[in-house]
Image (cartoon, rainbow, N blue to C red; front, side, top):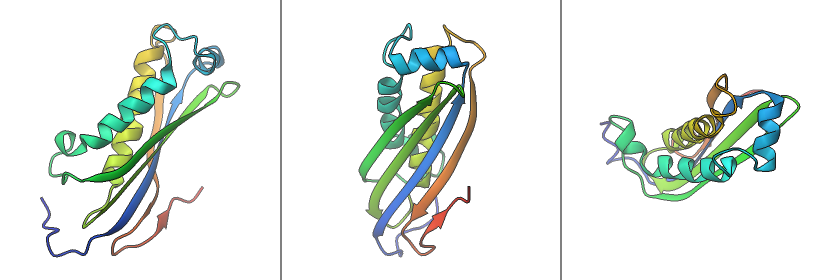
Length: 145
């Protein structure tokens, strides 16, 4: 692991997103809460929060962090067949929370896939990306577009 012992503790925040592509019919079922396994977005939210809390167990050499906040939200665009998961993680410490936010978004997307695979085997996790981060020596960063 990288030695962060000499770094100053600062407020840190990261936001990540994941996009799941499905058919409009599957997206409508998710939005209506009619998926065979139940509340897709609610379950994905809890799974994402759990993933953020366990990131250091999942990613080798990742520091365990005391997270002050993790939130996961989902938005369904039924016409486009898109389910967008957005995860935010915050802490005050010597290292950033980008991995925690990305783990939360990725596991939330995997949970959506698991919960809709009975409706549509062709569901696709199309994107997992860091959207923005703040805090630490490098300061603010935001993805263009």
